[in-house]
Every structure is written in C-alpha cells, then in structure tokens.
Image (cartoon, rainbow, N blue to C red; front, side, top):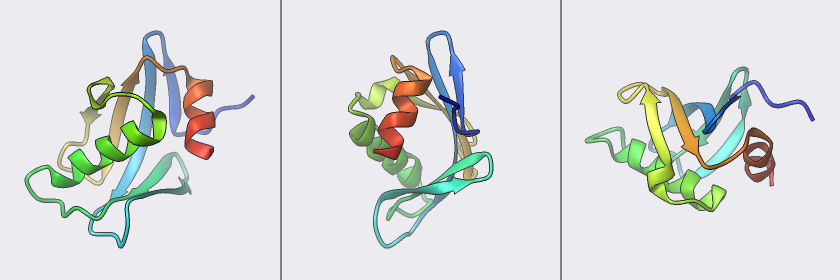
Length: 98
C-alpha cells in the first residue's frame, strides 16, 4: 500500500504534515493538498486555540490520547508537522481515510 505524501513513517511513530484552516464552520479533516492534509477547526488562531483543536480532533479521529500527538514544527504557522507516537504509517493512513 502506498502512503500519502503527508505521512512519513518513523521508528517510534509517524510524522504528519498538515495545513490548518482556523475559524472554519466545523471541525473536520479535509482532503490532501499536495504534500499536506487539510484540517479545518472552528477555533481562532489565538493563544494556541487552533493548535489545541487540531490535536483534539486528531486524537479523537485516531483513537489515541492527546499526549501522543505533538506539534514538532509550525506552532505559529498554518503549515504544521505533527508527530503521532504509537501508530504505524499504514494504521494512520487507514484511520484518516476512514
């Protein structure tokens, strides 16, 4: 199974490249945009509210704890790299598309 470009396997988890759209009408995981996965959140990009909303949305969708998801790059940018520990790349791909 070939992985989407926004998923990069690592020995202890998976890197996920995302583009965040804050102040959306609802929280949802959108389509792939090139090398990134679009994630829409209702939270504004203020005081890390949008970052927290992204982590909560992914934790819910991936059935893991929020502590397993870290923003490793792009804290103040719409373009972020997240690290999800305890999941394989294939598992992550399946959960995000399901």
